[in-house]
Structures are given as structure tokens and as C-alpha cells.
Length: 533
Image 1 (cartoon, helix red, strand yellow):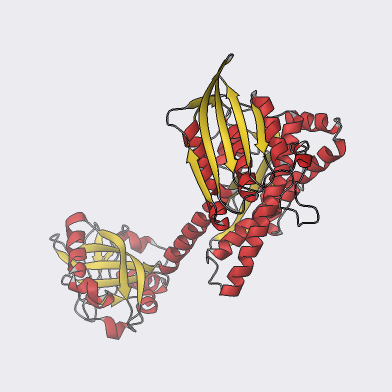
Image 2 (tube, one colour):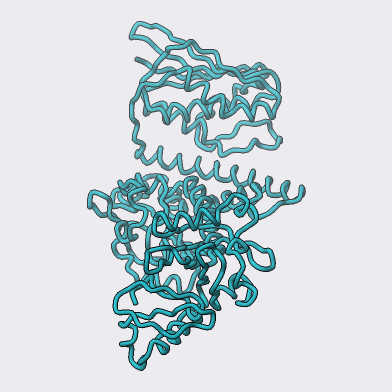
């Protein structure tokens, strides 16, 4: 008997196929037709034996519902799997329309009859539909419906095979939600990150990983993680998944990354498990530790600030990695993703988030200092719209000005373009404007742009003008020194490291620019940055 030519035992017969033997009439008068090939099975000597054998197979299929209906859709056969899935027994189901297994909405829409008609036209109907149990509850089912034909090729009935895929759909949706959440965390990370499943298949990668390895992340999805880190074979993954626990940066043995162009470079990797209902995923953070970076670190260690640079080289990973995790999960809690918070919990979490951001700012200042003093800053000249940049700086700092109740405005003509490193220029202007807002309690801060002419060529001047408390003459000479903080004697110092102006002055020097200032205590200050053509 070929696949698809099963008869419904003892209740529904047909006569397709070659070399067919006919069993005696079944109890309801239907003729049972059995292929001669089935009689060749060991121990099956008569058509009656074959019928019994097929009946056993169908009744043993408890994972799938197998239902036979006649030409008009009345149920004539119902296996144990159907009883388990729908809650009916054979006596209750036989003679009923197969529409009782559909939702009321689908019945009103005519879906049951369309399925039968489609199977006659196309040879079968396959799809996912909502199904209804005896108790009225619904589930999502995957259904295959095929017509059964008699000797004259007329339809004599249909075979309906279905299974419950509700849990499968739920797991798929859960995985999609987990994937979306993981993607948002990945993109906010400053390091190259990749998520792999238990088989080592890459599921997600962030933009930083694209930059570091030179791959398009869409092309990486579905490929083994060994394309990035060749030494991470299946044994490593199995060992980690057998004892799921976070592994910090540097806990792995020496590993090598491989870029898309085939070049290799040393890396450090930290691993963290991500437990989902669809299984355990592994988040890997990958950092480049090439010889060039190590030589730069050694050069800094040999400088006059050897002790400070040694601390920064050894602690930069350990300081930023857990702090970014704290900020990330604090943000997740405040978004209400794991569940709602009461007002007091939200208030305290915002305090944690604010303190964490402040600490990260301090850490970044110290790390910027290390980069500036080590001489590894790579300045790239590019055309910059001066007014657009000032508006961008003001936009980022306006919430701080609004919080203090002071004005923040931009005065700049359109069409003034300068050529320099955008990141360095932006950092200088942000530092100057942030200081102006910090030391101004009333009035306003103004960011201005002017074009000047002198004997040696044109000069573009960026100015930051405030109506703050100004700077005492005794403090002005040490204003650009590292870690210098200016304040009233005995007063609580302002938040910060005292590095902003020092870093700005150093960056301006590297750019070939000049920072100057004028200030009168009690009457405000004007800081200027001049860029020569």
C-alpha cells in the first residue's frame, strides 16, 4: 500500500491501487480494500490480517490526530490521537460534521468547506488554523487534509491529520522577544559582542563586531562561531554549557580572532550565559589585544606617569565592563521589562542610574587622559558645518541647562565650514559648554561662531560665553592643569575630575588650534577656540 493510500479501518473503504485484495464487508457494509504488497509483511497471510495490522498502527499514533470523514464532511473514523487532542471518544465523534473541530468564527466564515474544496482542487490542503476541543477551549493546530477517491476517481471522503503546535508557537514568540531584547543590549555595548546557541551557531552580532572583524553581521547569522575564533571548538562549548557560569575577561586561554580578510589577531573573551525557554544562549564579549596596543601600553608605562598608566591598562576592562552591565540592567528595570516597579523602587533605581552614569563619565575622563598623553589619538580632518555642530552640542546639554533654569542659545551664521577632526572638536566644545553651565547659576550660556581675518589668513572662532561667577585671578594660571578644580575655599567641590579643560587644551594643541579665555570674577567668562585656515 503506497503512502497516502491508507484506508480507515472497519469503517471506511476505498479501492485504489494495483493487485488489491478485498476483505469481507465491514460491520457497516463498507468494503475493506488491501494492497497485495501489504500481505507480504511477515505474518500477514490474509486481507483480514492486513486490516488488523493497519488498525493497530493508526490507533497507536497518539501524537497525531487522524480523522476520516465522508464525502460531505461527516466523521467516520477517529483514532486515539484524535480523542486525546480533541477530547471526544469515537462514539461521540462519528456521524458529526468535522466543523465541530473548528472555531465558531471559522465555521461562520465557511473555512471547513473551503478546506475540503481546496483539497479536491489541489490534491491536498495544508495550513495552520485555530481548532476547538470538546470543552470549548481552543488551540493552534497544523492540519493536513487529503481527499480519498474511489474506483471511478470520485471523492469518497477525506483524511484529516492534525497536531497541536500551540507550545511550538509560544516558544518561537518567546525566542523572538528574547532575540529583540538581546539585540538592544548588544547595540548599546561598547565592545564587539556575539550571541551563539548551544551548537555554536551565531545568532546575533553587533555593529562593533562588524568593525572589528570586517564581516557583515547579516552574513554571519547561521554560521559557526569558529569563523571568528578558530580555537573555540565544540569541546569548549560543551564544557561551558555543562557548568553554566559567567567567565570574566581573561579567564580563557590565549585565543586568536580571524577577520574576514583572513588576518588573525589576539583577543580576550568574556562569556555569559543567557537562559531562555528555547535553551541556553551564550553571550561572548570580544576585545582586540594586538601587539600594537600592547606596545603602546608599554610606551606609556615607561613615561613619567608610569604608575597611573599601569593602573589604567590593567583596570580599564574591569571598571567599564561591570559598570556598563549595571547601567544596562538598571535601564531594563526602569523600562519595566521584567515587571512593574512601585514609585519608591523607581526613584531609588534612578539614583543608581544617575550615580552610575556619573561614575562612567569619570572613568571615561581618566581613559581619555590616558589616550591623550599616550599620543595614540588619530585625528582625521574632514569638512564640518560649524553651526550644525554647535546646535548638536547645545541639544545634548540643554536638559542640564533646563534643570538649572538658565538659558542656552546658539548664535552662528549658516554656511561656515571648518576642516578638522569632528570628534576632537565636538569634545572640546562639549567640555567648554558643560563647564559654563556648571558654573552659571542664573542668566544664560551662549555658543557663538564668528569668522575673523588676520594677517596670516582667516580664523574661525568658536566662543562659549556665560554669565556665571567667573574665575579669580589667583586661579586662572592653573586653569588648564590636570586634575585642577576651581572652587570657593571651604565650599563643596563641583562634581568632576578636573580633566575637562586639560584634555580640551591638549586636543586643541594636537589640532593646531588655540584655546584662550577672559574672565572677571563675579561677571562671567568667555572661552574661545580659534581654528586657522
